[in-house]
Image (tube, rainbow, N blue to C red; front, side, top):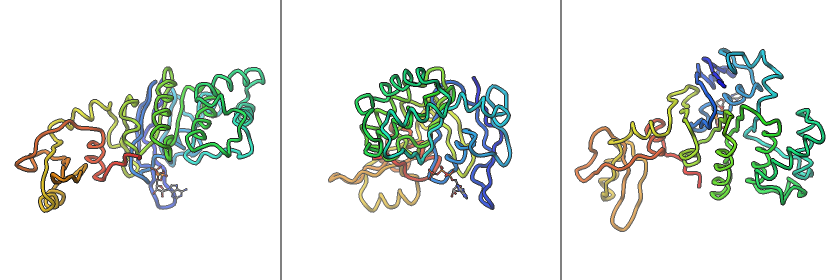
Length: 292
Ligand SMILES: Nc1ncnc2c1ncn2[C@@H]1O[C@H](COP(=O)(O)OP(=O)(O)OP(=O)(O)O)[C@@H](O)[C@H]1O
């Protein structure tokens, strides 16, 4: 299976939110990583066929999703960023409602709902009102909703926003469990969410794709460019003005700096193992959000 984004652009009035974005996805988890406002939601809404591109095409196995229309929606699961639940619906009623919208028969729906509530670990809460759920539970219910039609393409926009660290881990595991035989695309600006689950990372900046690579390749490219040194406050300021600093840890011994640089940035600096956060800082020149 191939989902191809072919030079897709979207312009809102005078704002170019997505700019000639091209990518090719097969089965597995892909992470769309970029700062706020880089165009991730706009791109995903186009890939979910909710929004029409201003130009360019999106193809599933060579066929335009705009032409496939309902045939595409039959194989698509989508969880938008702003995911609302009907407050007074119980979890199971909410899923029954969406199952009927998606055209599932009654018996088929009950079986699927049962299976999905177990998968997202909400079986014990199925008769509780979704309005009382925590952020993490609502998002898990959202994923169950997106999986009702057993989609071949699953698009989830910022699935871990607002979740606590434990919920984020649970979510990550869930995504990797369901990624077999499906294309899963998730967006995030939280680096630690994707380091262990993503097959490839798509780095998005100002509407454009800057890189599509496996995590290992991105890390490999940074080898020898990430440095660690302990300096006093004055030296720290000088280094910060001259180099990209991905982290500063202030301790009694001084300031421990992680620096990204082609050259050795300080006499006492030594190379250290790169992380995806360093990659993020390198490409976006801003501090990574660790999501905590
Ligand atoms: N309906 C709209 N009308 C006008 N401009 C918009 C609209 N939707 C988004 N934009 C603008 O397009 C750009 C990309 O927005 P988008 O929401 O796609 O980015 P994002 O990467 O998903 O950001 P975030 O992580 O904050 O949601 C932003 O500058 C945003 O202000």
